[in-house]
Length: 209
Image 1: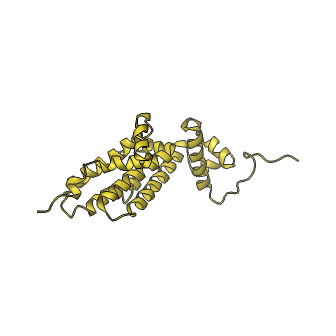
Image 2: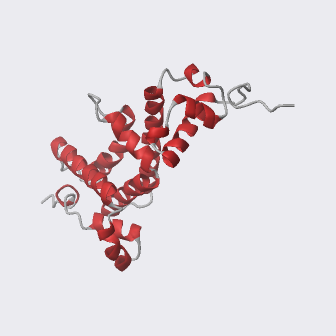
Image 3: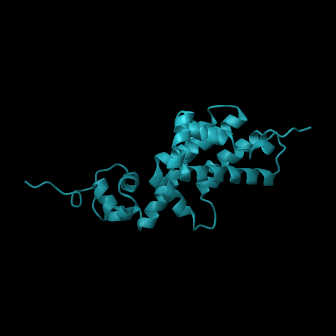
């Protein structure tokens, strides 16, 4: 008696879309973007080659769903980090560390998130509308004492976001290894870097007098 193959057996998952996104993320992280296709995702999820087309018309649409999930997970990570302290500077540092750790721990997902956003006319909704970007902006705004202008807030948020993104791109540089060892590890290194950024002083520490 022969065993049914993944391509011929009927679909039994309770949530096909969820299974396909999970499969896509696994392929991205283990094999890289070049290995991703709807057929490969179907095989990884254990469904027929035609099954993904019930939810995604092509690979690009599947990647959009993967990126969308990534932005929500980043938002959750930043929200958790932000809620761990009431101190303004510590909140900013926590946000920066959480951002870089998310990128470090999810490299393929992180790349897809930005690749899918780069050619759009606007930021993804889940980034700008009460999402991860707003976690940073709101933290600066809430601790500014009402003294920051809208332009100040926007520029400070962009500066903070770029600092996090830049460090996420550079965190694996071997040149940083001695400093990481000296400071007690990678996250201690990240915290020290963000604590040495003076770009938030004008917004957070400005003397109202």
